[in-house]
Amino acid sequence: MIGLTGGIASGKSTVTARLRALGAFVADADLVSREAVASPEVLSRIREAFGDSVIAADGTLDRLALAEKVFSSSAKTAQLDAITHPAIIKRLLELTGEAEKAGVYPLVFVDAALLIESGFNKYCDGVWLVTANRDVRIRRIMARDGLSYDDAVNRIDRQMSDEEKLPFATTVIENDSTIEELIKRVDEAFFEEAAGRRNGLPGKDDYFEENGDAFTEE
Image 1 (spheres, rainbow, N blue to C red):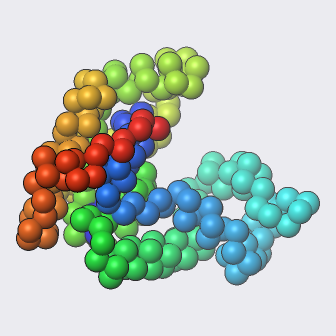
Image 2: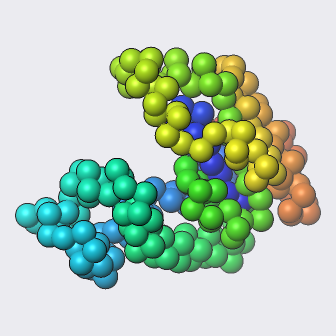
């Protein structure tokens, strides 16, 4: 299992889409997180820890109310993580374990923005880090989300930096250029990684001749 991570506007979602098009299994940590907090057991513990105000009228989690209560406090954030992370980790390990056992995927990934911060990287055989120049990321955020320069900078600065993540990475995918160049780099990393893990994997040309190129940008 390989962990895939990268900061905001690094291009991680495009890399994920490409990996799936190449036939890899990718477990989405964000989706698993949403499923985890919706479970009765986890939801009950969140209510107990943070009060009824974080529960919506229909009995589901009020994410906005929880965010307002939790993320201004590192202690409360840690408390929430202690409640949710075990369930998230358990489910991600189940999904990736099932995928590896199936034996039909050339590579198995976990896509997680907080892969390193959460410590999930310790469960991974390797870590792919998607990086991009800070100025490039700022421009992407401003164009994509309609934010000011200062707001874009604040979003980046709230996250762990690429420099801090680099020591954990076994593969680095740089994304400072075009999408075509990014796809080329992902393809090269994919086939190099797969060749090292699975003898007899078809070469790149053979793969596309048999499967075609199903990639569509997200």
